[in-house]
Image (cartoon, rainbow, N blue to C red; front, side, top):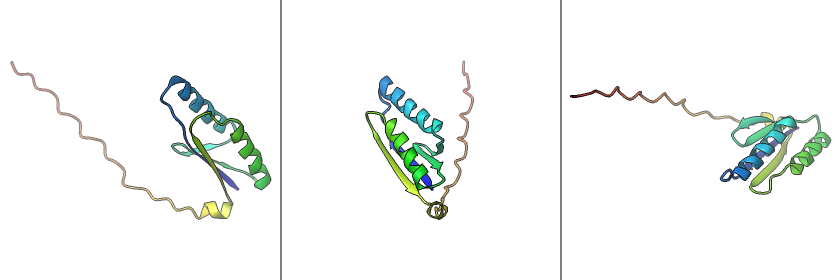
Length: 101
């Protein structure tokens, strides 16, 4: 079973940034890995083990923002399709400035 934690937390004040960092660090300490920005994932042996991690995440929720948890079976997770866009090219470097005197 897989647990996916998706969150949207404010970072507009120093206190909110601390809460964000504390929450993210708590996810990492509980065995979650970053799948993409604000989406973390963790594998669990079974549904009972997943419930333990659901409660652990609930215990570290920050006071503001939104956090969503969802559980998937291995079969459901394996059916995920991933689409990648074109890779961005590096921007063209600005030409050197010419001095005229």
